[in-house]
Image (cartoon, rainbow, N blue to C red; front, side, top):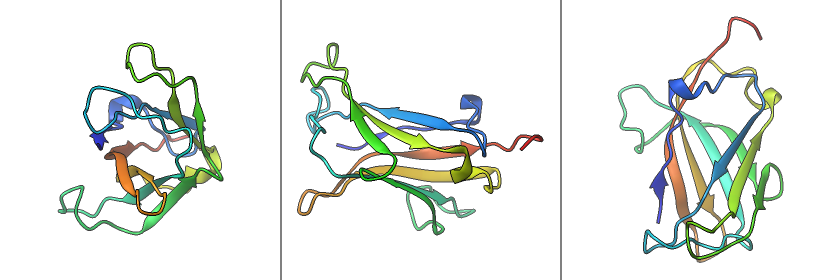
Length: 133
């Protein structure tokens, strides 16, 4: 089950800063947690195309993180959300975004295992640009 996870301007996501994004993954029933410890994962960021719905055709990929580089799973899995500490961590280095123009992007965290591909989280990302880079 994919859930929407927005990064709004008020979240202060600045280009050229180190960032750590944390995701908890719900199972298809929408209430219990999914154990993602063995998943192959990919997080992708694309520039939003003006006048398009955010989940329609978008611009080219500007940043990708994978289980091999930039994505890790931390914490202990429990099917009960209140006691589950397992999180998918996406690590973004300052150099990954330093050349970005501010504006609207779209992101998705996807399971990439053959035959089990599914978008786990998706959302609009508002990237800000600081006068100091």
